[in-house]
Image 1 (spheres, helix red, strand yellow):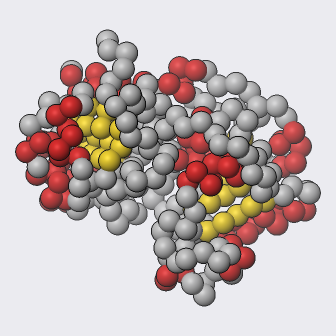
Image 2 (image 1 turned 30 degrees about the horizontal axis):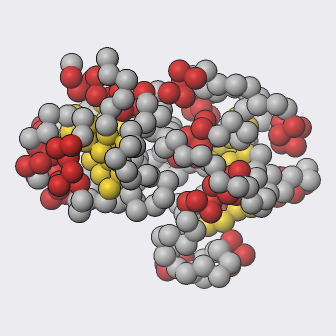
Length: 289
């Protein structure tokens, strides 16, 4: 088995710094317009959610022996998910994966966990004990509930919504102070500074989501963080422990829970989700079967 799999990730959000580009990287992430010209130089090519439909017909991908599709979002809720005809073409010509087990059963996809990107934390910027950044996606009321509960126990929160133009006037500006109404108001590197100074990250599910998220991966990757979620499906995860995970609506005593030391997670569990390690290696070996 190969130890390092040179992996090309074709992702519309690859311009963000949390996906490094360079010849020494175990993985390289590029926007869809750059992918075809680079594919031949990599052991594994992963076309991710949001890749334009026409790209799946590119000869550079179709002829690559190890080119796969990974659906990053819940199929039922993602506007970027492929339609029925394109999905049928993808499944006929590529190995197709999802981190949503329900989607795997419903659409005939293969399961792979949501990967994390091994980026070192920048210097901390203290914002609150608990941090959330994301689009509203039906979660605003739950975030308000969490903030009220935290305040009642003397726990500080920093909740910020990444809104689009259609959201202006719907959500109070205190949650998006002075931001331009676009998808990228806060750079991911700035968000990591907030996480570096926090005790826990919040992951509330969006419609159609049952498991797996970037927030869960941040919790797994950064050993000082705990996870606050409303998703009881985490009870079945191999990394779950009550010392590390607080389930809103099920658990009590938020402040006392934050003060409990985090329990270490098995390195093998972490490696299986590392895009520069076991995640790419396991998919590569699966394609070879």
